[in-house]
Length: 212
Image 1 (cartoon, rainbow, N blue to C red):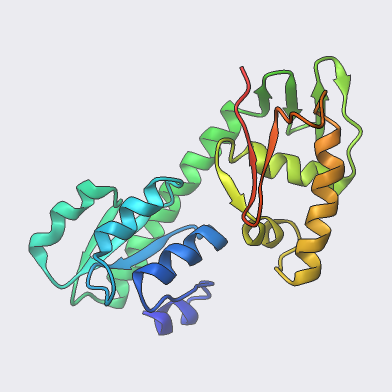
Image 2 (cartoon, rainbow, N blue to C red):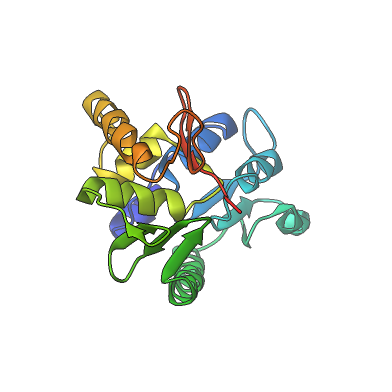
């Protein structure tokens, strides 16, 4: 499978067991997960359930047991039975990618303006407001605010954020992230000691909270 993905210019990560798969998924937020149910540490269904607590990323289940098709009910999006051909794998990936692109395009068309309490982000214009006042953000601060808003209610790990903003996760990237987040949080918050919009999860990451 990795040979096929590499030959067709897919970027991919591999995980030797379920625990590592969950960690990689939470850190890198891949577009699609290819999940074998026969894992050495935990049942693949447990991986699906864990991922579904924080993401709707497409999951294609892979198994040698045809009777496991009911595992889709656990939250998977598609199913491949071993053995399968390279062409079948690529076809499933293409179908899943098209479905994902359609969902993302529809969501972008419906939500070109994000609203959360007094906070408003006009994605098309590249501006953010608190009430009627425009927030004066640096380009990095604006990208961080948009990333948090597009994942509202979810805790985004330091690794996931730095990968999306800088394309890497070196120690100095995480140090820079803390600085930028400290300045960003002051701008939409009326009371810095009681943050309303951006919550810090110490040692983990940040989350934009839903505000009525």
